[in-house]
Image (cartoon, rainbow, N blue to C red):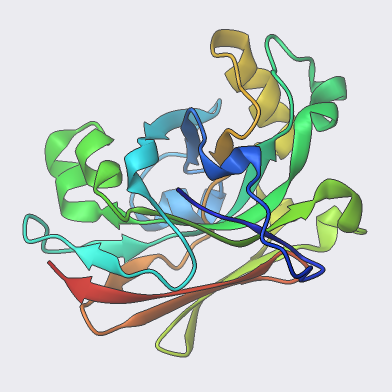
Length: 223
């Protein structure tokens, strides 16, 4: 179970609905340059997949590099946390259903993703969805369009892109997903990763920063 702290660092740690999401919805290839770097076409509509809640870990927890994979990649992303049940939501109302934001590392066994052709195994290992360190209410984010996603591996910047580079912005994502799937309070949506993804090795440290949202940092360990 993931715990989120409010960004004002209040003393008591509060369990929020996001602590136990009914589902983790992810958007693939949502930055054009990321799609291109992996040799894929830019999608014409949101490319949706799911991670199991059992993949969740928090800030500081170890990402386990499974023996089954020869390449495990970091993917820094902005996470949305749903505040109320969303079903068939129109784009113009989508922000009413967002409770707040967090930082996500959509860890991926890249070789298994390519081998399988579908993404469940490559995305679904235990420890492959890192979220935290805090829940930031949307009211606390003064300039959403100024957000940037940065990922550092062992202190070296690997990803750095503005949230405005998203092909499908957050309101489009919520409209698209809620058309076929009810989103429940506490559900987590990972909005997609910028270019610069790459492998992590046991002994590495991966750090994802989104100014105003938080810093998510985790070690990588061998299974």
